[in-house]
Image (cartoon, rainbow, N blue to C red):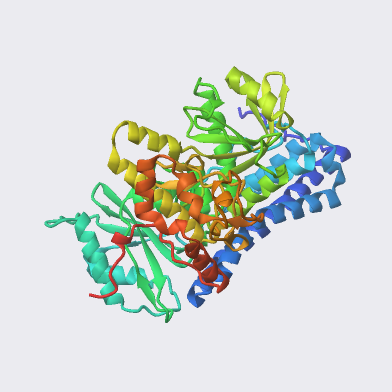
Length: 598
């Protein structure tokens, strides 16, 4: 006897009001995603234009493009907010719509090639539309809703080459010419010979090639400043060797391979938080970041997203990392060690390698500026080529952190020195505006430590780096302003980086002067300057005395960098900038560059 047939399931139709709300939520979700898709299309267009500008050696236009691309995201978010509010003004006041909008948005992402970035874009739009201090997790993407592991696009993220099949030099030639740059090489055979010689240093004979020997190379070039970079890794058996090869141009716009960077430390410096963002044409950014993580496993994923120009996605990941770390740690935020700044109140979480900077309510003399001027200086750094000598900053608004994780001394200082920037609500402290930077050891503390240990080589290296940082900033058209040791930090790669931006200025805005000779004995004995000083005047002859107070350290500094105390040095840099010249600042040591002969 057969079982009776089950009754067909019946689904109650949605009421007209519910159906209309679902339709509205779906329409808003599609509007937001359309805004993101336009943003990412323009983002890729910028990378494709960078390739053309590189071929034309149009370096000023490349610099403008890099600056303009940073602004793309906020422009597209503004457009999306206007579109949502223009068509659906209820989205601003009816919070109950947003869980449905989020659910509809998730439904649009499974086949998307940049879902993690699209989620961040959604968050940016939602937060601006809602105008709320706190956003419940059902309104925004606190965690990613779509996995990006093994996500691929139409074209492969990287290409594989097999030297055992074609031979090493033929394989390297195929890689070098595979990016279809319009320019010819100056002497590709010579450059490949240099690459092979450099490889032999890392694979001394008798090097054994495993059957799995392959070279994996990311499919797009990485453009920055006046260079394009081939990025990849060599796999031989169970070992992987990351590498990058910079491509430069000569005066005839012919290409040349300039160096072989062949370990994770060299690549981490190339991708440093103190350098400008690369322009890279990526269909699937998550796949590029995953590949880069295999090359630099110690590099946070957030910093890699920023390095390839997706700085908003980097901010999202950093914020998640911070809260994840807070959940799994127990130490407190404390006042950062070192000399206190007159403009910024700086604190840190010892177990987390970053510092948090809040603009003080009042600036002690001789600081003469307002809050907006400070913000403008930090924006200048964000938009400028940082040449590896200025730390990138993450800017946040309305950040809620657990109050019980703040040291009482820090809470007292926040209340007294930055009260307008903080609020206390229940068990949280809400910071209205702050900057976050990678933590470095202040240079003054580093030198004091080296002196106390009698480590002269360490002192010499730090003072050499200090002057090099000032020189390279000048080459990039930046005058640091307040160049005291306390405003520079030392990275774990022993590089000196500037991180205090409230007095920086374009180099061409400064008036570098010689100190005029005294006119009389009274001039010589005067405690105050006997000569007029304009607001833009700078007297380099005073640098050694004021920047490096300790006599032994000052002597070392002058041994390396006496030119920095000569107004002619600075005036010469100004003349080059005014003539449109762009200096070469290489993100790798001079001793790894290939000779142009042989």
